[in-house]
Length: 119
Image 1 (cartoon, one colour):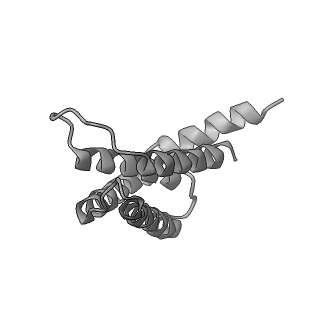
Image 2 (cartoon, rainbow, N blue to C red; image 1 turned 90 degrees about the vertical axis):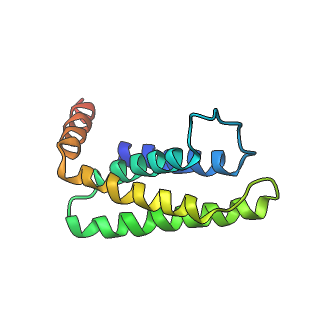
Image 3 (cartoon, rainbow, N blue to C red; image 1 turned 120 degrees about the vertical axis):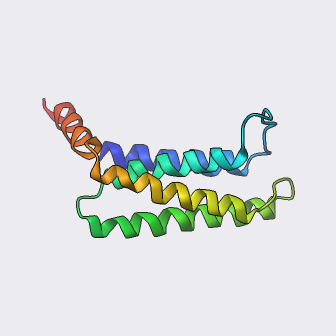
């Protein structure tokens, strides 16, 4: 349950930061790379929470939809710009992040949570 709470807190943080006025990034930092990394991390986290590989599709659809909605909302702010390139970067990040399901990460998170739940 802890991991779901942290995951939804991460989604809320991404939504808030995405809807604030855009910060000035150094030239060496690509906006698209930040989108990719953010959504890859979100996908890795949520993919680590599901037990069945069939559920990965729900994670992917949910996160891609979340990114699309955020992008549309950015276009409505008047101070942010909606870009299809951001949606593409988000989506690629989601696909790559889901590979965490096949890594040791899900098992390690379950073990850590089980250790915390012990009285």
